[in-house]
Image (cartoon, rainbow, N blue to C red; front, top):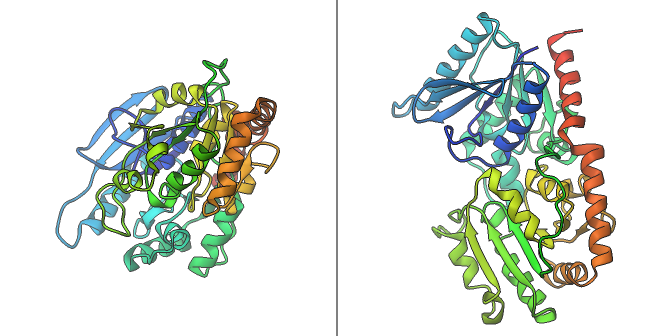
Length: 381
């Protein structure tokens, strides 16, 4: 059973920047490679066509076809040709693709196609209160209807996706996973009051709420500090070129003195920053099952996060973290301060978060669910 992952992103120096989709694929592909299952990763939108092997994984870069008005179609046909070639050469048995923008909507191949619902554009626009582009809605719905099987990374994501596309697709819930050996608990490096957010600086992840939350944290706890790590993203709703610049104006003068924005860091660097934090915060409005949360939990960090939909499938409120609506700035700040000022609760939550990773989200556990699923899809015994 040889699985090929079709993706627009993957965290590697040769493949460009990546977000949660790419990180989730990396975690799974590496776990499959460790079991000698020969996974492949097909990354479209690359600067050139290429092939290389690393760590038991075959990587195929695919350059998009450029032709005004037909690029979307010709690129899909190029991907289709590549998949069919690899299938004929017995290098792949099944293809997994994300629901994002419906890349497989006009791809017809000889092997099964599985869609993994990590959150489509339609899904995120709905959660973010924005209107989705018709072409994205069309391709995403068509891809889901054509897929041989569907995985959802959370029950919430699967149910809402069916609702938004008016579908009745059966789906299997298999969460994103984390390499709990790579993101492991480390001894506390110092005794600080550091709050950490890591991820893209973007409205849908609650970054315009975070300054208002931190203002109240500082008013209650002047020793608190906030560190931000991630790519600064343009704001699609206002047209502003920088979410960070929008955030700066929302901090109080006193709070802004306690803020440090580090910028984006590589996948391998993130863990060292998580290790220095006391509390990790994620006031997001739109997620599916975020890998960043898993990374913080895996390192035994107490979390204060959004209470929307997917969150309850990851964190048990009051046991392995606190869940608060991002708009409730005062309560969000109070929960952060409880953790900053009570190390017993902090450590208890951190240990419980790590245990949830080991029980439900560790790659060791989740890869077995994926293997069982794909054996069923390919009818392999």
